[in-house]
Structure formats: C-alpha cells, structure tokens
Amino acid sequence: MDAELEALVKSLDAFLQATGAKAKELEAAYESKLDQVIERNPNVSKHSLNKAIIFEYNRWRASQDNKFPTMPPKASRGHLKRIDNSCASRSRSQPRRRSTP
Image (cartoon, rainbow, N blue to C red; front, side, top):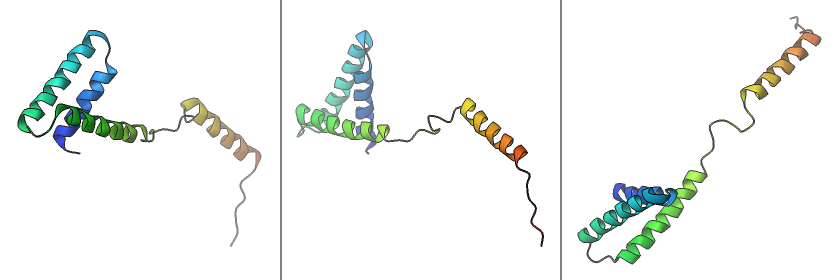
C-alpha cells in the first residue's frame, strides 16, 4: 500500500474509532488530508477518492482481523501448570524403561 494511502486509511480508522469531541477533531484532520490530495490531483473528485479510501480501509481492517494471536486463548499460565502437573504425575506412576543393546 502506498504510504500516502496508508496514512489516509489510518486517519479514517482513528476517526471511526473515536467518540465525542475527539471524533470531530479527527474528522477535520481526515477531511484536511483528503483536501490536500485533491489539490495535488485535480482530476479526482472528493467523492471518488473517499470511496477508494473506504474500499482500502475495509481491506486493511480485514487483514488486521485475520492476524493470529501470539498465544492461543487457552494457553494461560494456569492451564500450562495443569499440563505440567499431569505429565509429572504420569512419569512418577510409570517407571521409565531403559532399552538394552
């Protein structure tokens, strides 16, 4: 993704995630960035540019949502301790056999 497009997408995301007075500030910042792009590209309408940014925003959000978490949900410390304890108790109850050559 182009750096300028990515900045617009992230600006839109910040605006959509915010609430209250902060949302109005971020909306103004997003609109300002849109106007700057339109000034440099007079053949592009604000409506079509905004539509393209929303399209890229939806793709960007989908890629953010598809990232896997670093730790599985059930792999908490307590869960891992139970696994360690069950393995330890199993090893005490069953002696280890040695193979002879």
